[in-house]
Length: 506
Ligand SMILES: [Zn+2]
Image (cartoon, rainbow, N blue to C red; front, side, top):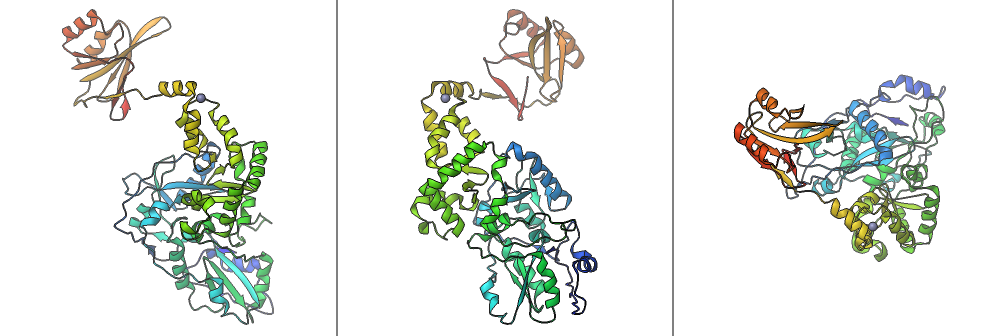
């Protein structure tokens, strides 16, 4: 059952003669089931290690197939008051991570750089073992899950700015506790404990609440049993990521189910519901082939075991064969016999040569081949192998040469309109036109040739005119024209472009 932790906790009155029904529960306590969820009192403040330098990550691509859904989810969070756009500079910018689920997208920040700077409060999180000894007479157990638990916790302004992240539509920051932040579970737990402290038969475990009964609450708890609650042991030291990312709700089972979601402890089997492959541009034949080769790839099988059992605390304790994957351990998961790093499929060794050929088939040069492949495929040395593979291809080398950036020329920023203009000539429908761009305002005009003086008569004469070395400009006639009007000519070398303040000129 998912609910908002209310500021004042309700005592649920159970009556043995007439057991509480689900409808009664929902009617009598509507305030805890409302949308959007409300926040618990107080604001959260992150403590930072001053010795860690802030990190500003560049924005990452969102796969085209996911863009629309990701945008919708961002907008939903903005409407719910969970995130807000950022316009001012921020010291920290994290990457955005999207996790695709069958019916929704989950957004969180890639917390690795920020987590290194956040100071832990070392609040001890009780485990099932910690509370079991208190429950010798308990006979009925119910697990209750706070709905969007972290999003019930407000961040203070300073901490909110630390959570700035960079989706393709401009920077945003979280106003509520975001998923993925290492200190989030202990902060949330601490709050939850303070709110629930002293209530008999209620034990917070991780971010769930265990309700136990052995006497008069039993009737009520029997009613709750129809919610099909499971408790599954979940290993893994990196619970703050794997727990929140792998939590899933069961499919809808009736018209009233939006209120009643089932708390499910995180298990890797939930990934079976999340068809990541459908968001990737991978044919089902290729997918079966990858699954089959993953099954016979010794390293990937060992990696799978480590992912499912949980990573050790130290790299030195990781099996040698899979140490290459240590830096990405937070992003690895298993689904339908295929391993993923984030949204990318991890390619078994036996298929890499064939896929290299595929990646190379477009002959767009090593770096571009890699950029195209990295949205879908992954193996630890993929970038270097693609570059090696492509290095001796003359078509790729030619392409890469042609794609080289032309040198950008910076120009002095003018102090008044029409002081510096760029011009160029082009033909359309058998007529010649001249286009002029004012460097001060980026205002532009097009006129039919040969009426250039009309332009200068309208706006005054420029100090400087920039053009390419086309025959109309690099000629005696234009030199004389410049001398008459008293402007200097600036003729650009072949194939150079003008850049001023980040905008391109004419
Ligand atoms: Zn090539």
